[in-house]
Length: 149
Image (cartoon, rainbow, N blue to C red; front, side, top):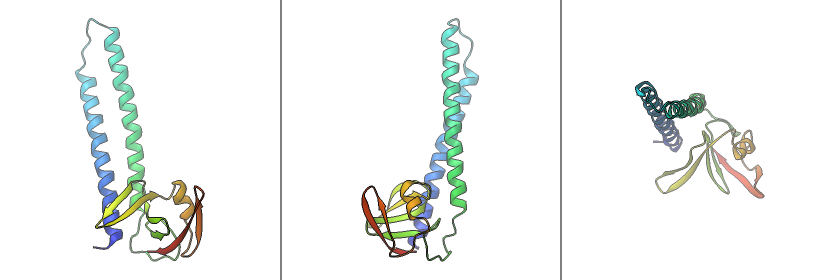
């Protein structure tokens, strides 16, 4: 299977895993919120409910972020052919190989290390639109684009 397809699948699995974890957290908090009964402690009960409410809001924000990742992945066309870096590009450079998709980080396929990065990440923004043999400067280091697939 082509490397880009494997990288794309790894990104999809990463998003699905995050989604399952967040959904489990939300369900767990809903169950805890509904099962909590009014105790004689009063203040402790209200504090517990407030903490659960905060956890629900946090999980809701995480859910929004994961949904954005899913949307981002849905826009990737793996077999599109471009001469410049775009969403879905596999960029071989003098400082590593980058898959422009979502911020997942390091992915190992066989003996090779790839970095899944978002087009909105600092290095992703620098790479977007660039062509082979162009250079970018990131954190004081020059990086040359060797090949775009």
